[in-house]
Figure (spheres, rainbow, N blue to C red):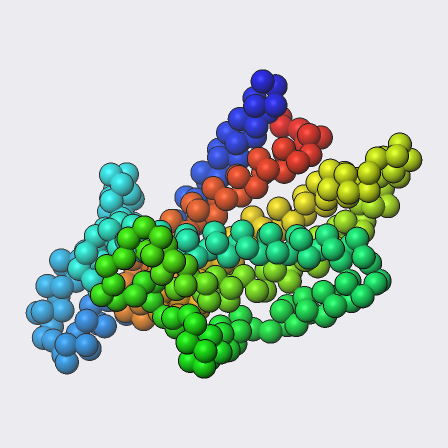
Length: 328
């Protein structure tokens, strides 16, 4: 009961601290985007081959782009108060609908990549720390160095060339096979095949990072007094490594994982474009190219909320891993 109350106080404190951050991000994004020359109407006019001044004025009036900066900000905040993210000039659809349609695909890609990176990276780090300066440590250290120094997009391209073009084992783009009416296990297998290359491409850098971080943290924790005490008591080496050393070594790993969630959003844009994955990354790129500021604001707001939620979850995980963390 005491532990549960401690976790609840930590979650409540972190969420209260996050509210000013969200508002600051919202205000900064709005001002920066509105100060950029041009708007979505200019892009629409160029795509249609031209438009009269009256037509441009009508379009700007329809999307509220003819108002002053302060009026646009007040109108946007009023829409947000009613849980309305506005309308996308590029797609002529509600921004909320566009984000909801793409969000599950991006979350699938990001969460799968993060979980895969944590599992493989931590496992490799444990082996490296347990066999330090021996051949498993040297081999894994070389593999980790290669993954760390190789750009993710190049790994993705080589994966397409090898597994899609040469061997024909995996599809090269999309989220599912077009025209296939699959159900149950066949549907899951098809989704798995389409997601495998994008997930691996997005996860490779973080696998190397978490492996190096876990190895360094475990080697540092192994020198602590409580570890020597546990060994002196005759505890099994595996129990000492997992329960005493690894549990404390995971604290910096979970901290970095929370910070890297935001970086995964940026990496998802490149990966989704490379593999034709219909997610928020590609939608963000389309919004940037078309100067669709309403859509960009909605995506940035959602991204900041997702990052804050993940960091709250990581704070709770750290409090569970280390009961010494106190909540005021």
